[in-house]
Length: 418
Image (cartoon, rainbow, N blue to C red):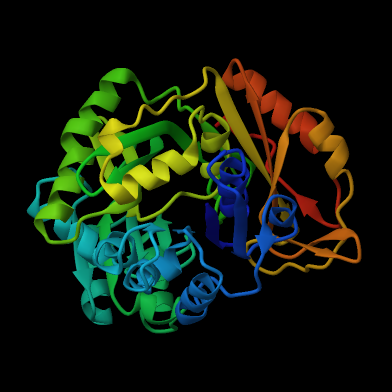
């Protein structure tokens, strides 16, 4: 099969790496890809959001299957357009991807179908939003309604902080039109866990649980990022909690989307808070998480292409998905200054030495130039290692990161420990 993966980050590198292991995949392409992806797939210089260009290239080059990984092209309807062109595509159609593209929609869906989540209110008027914050007090959570690269959520510890967040979103347009509507919700407390699940519109197959570290600095300090590291499985996600999540959250979500005429095929990302009153939904995403995908796919012991095809064909219940024993950890090596201001174009050394230690180095923001790998983004690499225990996986990831260096390289030293 000739397969195209859409996207160009660490998540897409992990997906391409896993698909390259499938005997079904004879030719693998990635658009736009990056310096690391180029080692396992042929990179095609088309922007991930260029729906027409992507469909045109896929048709002209007779792709048998397309996997759309990022949120933006899903929300823009790339899967719909590929299907209309007669090309099987993995990922939700636009009318189902709205569970991530609009937080207001997803909150209304949960309310209507009694799926446990935080109490909330949605606002399109700045003064009303500010009045509600003053009335509720802090801590309180402010979310931009639309897509904001994983950075449109502020957990405000003071009323002033919440007011500033709302003004930046609604008045200053910090996230463009994504912040024209805001969702303000109660601040839930408890451990956070992520569960990604394959879905074929009716059936659901949860992957291993994981935990992501969003803050830029040690001790969960500093600004929110796209993720500084992740590990799986989460020790906090017990079999009892898993069973409850399936019954109270996962299956009801799939059923709700189907009932609304928005059957979901692809990966649903369940961001969960394990509160004292039970698990609740923090957020939905309509795709694989980044960097959670890197450790999760490192633990997958089945053919990923088989699973993708089953999701598209509606036969997920007939696939036996196997996972390895043990644990995996992904450590993100970022550019200094990320997620605010940072410079790119620095040469990266030590990649071969790192992989020789048994880790897999997934490239997030890199480019290949004149035989060198250069930095080309905020999150540059995801050093991913497995072990028979979580402690061993964490130690292996940090050991494998030691040989790698580039100017102003920055990483957290407490992934998996907080």
